[in-house]
Length: 379
Image 1 (cartoon, helix red, strand yellow):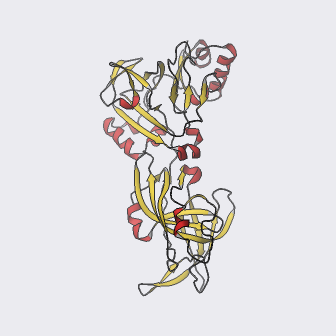
Image 2: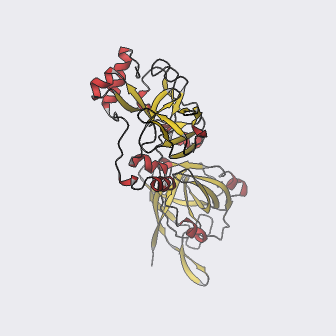
Image 3: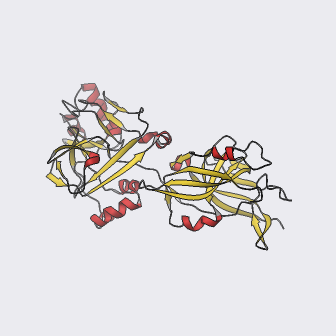
């Protein structure tokens, strides 16, 4: 009787066919071509359910359901995998032409990494899938979220090795980072200090509460592959003087979501507050404020205090980390646990913002009015 089985694997991109001869295993050299292959975030990694007709082989003297590659030469032929393409949304029927044991480096949402082992399957159409190897499923049991997966080493599976019907489905996390780039000078009781040199307990100048102790500091590093996959994480460069006279005093580089203090009569008329906080990405219509597409990697730093604060960064006013739900999700489980230990109940709270957050179409209108009237954002 014909039977079919399904499993959930993780799709991680499409690559030109690795195995030049689908009737045999891939060569060592072909497997080596996978080294360094990386996929980042939900645009490149997604859970896909694949279904195929079962093949049966004897394992430990028991008949076991498996799937066959094009080169297993099973008496009933290879298994035709059926799934919905994560890129086109159309139905796909394809066969497994490449099957390799692979060591991966997994980056979690909080920026930490783990090296794990698993397997990679490539379809006839080039689609790539990965999952834990049968003997390493237990090592994945605590991995519930991924930011990226990078292949460190690949070795072809022998032609006698069939694909076990193993499922796994961690969440794929898309970072939304709010922070300063490394090198940003933050005003403290000891003068301006590079953000990466700050330590918990250092006294940082705040607009509203004078010198305040730094309570938590975090870091996120993005390499060229991360930035290519997620161009929305490219930093915003605010050139010296772009906000107003000597503001910033030197180019300020922040993440796109990092909020900058805007202080002007235009802001007051539009938002009912003399000072508002605006994401840097919304300010790029202004001269001297642009997406810095030339960077090939960047390290972002987060600063957190007892309250949401306005701090002085390269001579300009901008926010500290606001522990709202979206910002906390971007930090990942490890960082959230650290913050919860310092600030019990913060995950259920709605912290007061240092200034009103300016959002929506009115922000673009405000920026356009500043441009048209040639008015500084921080007057």
